[in-house]
Amino acid sequence: MFPSIRRVFAGLAVAATVATAFPAQASELTLEQKVNLLIAAYPATLSKAEDGSVALRSGGSLPVDDGKVKDHAEKLANGDIEDSLSQLYPAGPCAIKPDVNFDPGRIRSDVLMMQLYGQSANEVKASLVPVDWFGTVLRVTKRQGAAAALEKVRDALKTMPELKAFLTPSAGTFNWRRVAGASNMSVHSFGAAIDLNTQHADYWIWAGGKPGRVAQYRNQYPMEIVDVFERHGFIWGGRWYHYDTMHFEYRPELIAIGKAAGAAACR
Image (cartoon, rainbow, N blue to C red; front, top):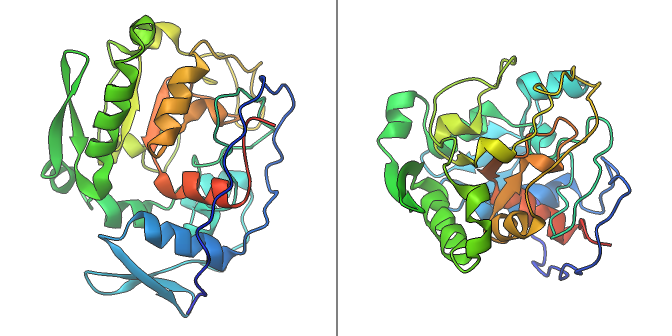
């Protein structure tokens, strides 16, 4: 069994915008510690870790490591749980310039995501609930607390009316599909992601980038928005080398792991 760890997280320091890149692989946590934080983030579905696997409350288990050595592209296409936790997500109200192929959270395990949210479009749809998003109704999964977390994000952002133009109209939530130009599933497939107003969006493919060779990083969204989402368990596509600045997805395990390891956007 993986050992338990103390869940004592250091607070994030608030500082000026950081211009330097964040190292892609720095970590003081073991894989076992990361897996324990993953389980703690999804207690309705995951029960414990033992013998290199994560046990499911419904029965059965998922292997943490498939034993394959992969480059970045292979992790994106066919990631396992270990791959999905391999890069630390640096939360905080500061912008950073990501290193080449630093994509924390963009690497996912489709097998795990389907256990968390549903194996098919119809199964995911059965768990979608309406969330009012500044006058528009969005469909978001209630599983794992994603819809409730988005409502908390909305309520916090309502206190900042000057930011509304960046938030609405939303470009969407649920959409069962693969990532554009890739073989792995989008988190939109599971109803656990939201895209903001595309008028302010920057996206590496729109900018003419190629995998591993992306055009100049750009972001137009205020970091106050990013900070609110991150405080409620969402990661931001603007933290990625392959940037997608309008995109947020519910990945509380990555927020928890990053905090536990001392990863922070503000230095």
